Image (cartoon, rainbow, N blue to C red; front, top):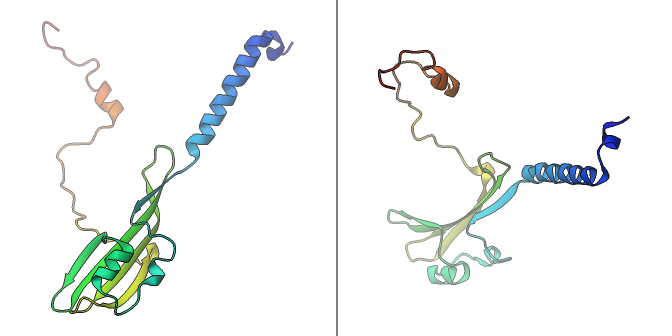
Length: 157
């Protein structure tokens, strides 16, 4: 006789439902969570920027920039930065898209040029790769837990 036939019908329904919920939980845990960060322009706003526009016109159209950069005696630049991150399960978020809209102004605060950059245009800058060496040996968590088993104990404990 099969194992499922040996279980009464109400218990079989419960176990089937429980298995379905477990399968659904596993599938939903693998679905990535998408997170948009930074500046999200309205449709068509970036195409409306033209050379010769004033800084105040750009701010009125696009809002405050994500960051600015001042260049000596040449004017400054506005950067509108947005990113898309995907997180799957317990893993760290991964940046899948990046958009940087850079606007350069001349010394009279008029738009001199603008460009749009993506994730493929970026370069990874490693600020500091040096690591501080540690003395002794590194133990795994299991080695740390079991290192005191069977060792000498203090009196009274």
